[in-house]
Image (spheres, rainbow, N blue to C red):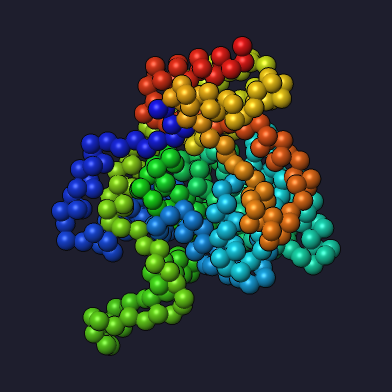
Amino acid sequence: MIPYGKQDISKQDIEKVLKVLSSDMLTQGPIIPKFEQALAKYCKAKYAVAVSSGTAALHLAYIASEIGDNDIIWTTPNTFAATANAALYCGAKPDFIDINPNTYNISVEKLEEKLIQAKKDNKLPKAIIPVHFAGQAAELKKIDALSRKYGFAVIEDAAHAIGTKYKDGKYIGDCKYSNIAAFSFHPVKTITTGEGGAAVTNNKKTYKKLLMLRSHGIIKTDKMIEKYGQWHYQMQALGFNYRITDIQAALGISQLNRLNRFITKRRKIIRQYNEAFKNIQHLTIPYEKEKGNSAFHLYVLQINFKKIKKSRKQIMKKLAAQNIGTQVHYIPVYRHPYYKKLFGYDYKKYPATENYYKKALSIPLYPKMTDLQIEYVIEKIIEIFK
C-alpha cells in the first residue's frame, strides 16, 4: 500500500531513541529542553515548549492567550476539528471565515469584511487562528495589521507548516506576526515524534505560562527548594498533563536534523506531480503563491467529479484496490454533526470552502516514496481521466 502520508524513520532515529531507553530518565529529563532549543533555533523564535500533541499545543496556546468563557475565536473551516475544538475546551465559541479559493487558507478579504461588521455589532473576536493549510503560509502580515487595528490575538495553527517559509524568507514559527505558533509532529507530518507537538513564542511571560500549564499548573523554583527543600512545589493554575517524553524528544531532534532534506524530497515529488497533471481537463493542481516556500505537508488535487462522471467514493475505492491510499482534507468543521447541533452553521456562508471540499482529494506524498511509486501513482491518477 502507498499511503497518502507516512513517517521516515532512519537507523539514526532508532539509535537516538534506544539511547534514551537505556538511560535513567524516560520523561522530564534533559532531552526535552534540547529538543525545544533546537526547534526554537530552527524557527528563529526565542522559546519553544514541546507537548504531547498538536492539539495540546493549540489548547495551551489559547489558554496562555487568555481565551475563556464566552470569548469568540475565528478560524478557517478548512482544517482538522482540533483547531476549533481547542476553543471549546476553553469555553469559547469558534466561528469561521471562508477560504481563499486559490490558497485554501483563510481569506483576508472575507476576514476584514467580517471584522467591520463585528465592530459595529460589538462582537469582535478575542483571537484569529490562521491555518497554514497543506504547508502554504497564510497571509500573516495582513492578518497582523488587522490585529493591530481591531485588537485580537493571532495564534498560528502551523501543524502542516514546519519548514515553510513566509514571503520574506523567514520560517513559519518565528512569531514575527503572531503571539504563538503551534506545531504537530504526528507521523504523517513533515517530522514526527510519534504523537507530539510544540508551541513557540517570543514572549517570555507566555513561555513561562505554557511551561506551567503543560505540567498540571505546577512550578518548582530554586527559591522554593532553598526555603522548603527539594520536595517542594506549588500548583498555581489548573494545568494539564501535556508532557512529551524524552523518548519522543530524542526522535524529534534526530528528525529535525533531516527536516530540510525531507522538504527537498517532498518538493521534488511535487514537481513531478505538477508536470504530470498540469494539462489534465477537470483537474486542478495545488496553487503556490510564494514559489518554493511551502513545505507541502499535503498534495491536494481538485477534481471535478461531476464533469468526469465518477464519484469521489468510486475513485478512492478504485485507487485503494490498486494499493494507492488517498484522503480528504478536510470535511469543513461546520459540517460535523457536533458543530451542526451546537451552533447550526449555514453552509451558504462559505461558498469557497464548499466548492473546495466537493472536489478535494489528497494523494500520496512523503519522503520515502520511490521513483517507481511516484510514477505508478501518476499513471493510475491519469487513468481516471481517460
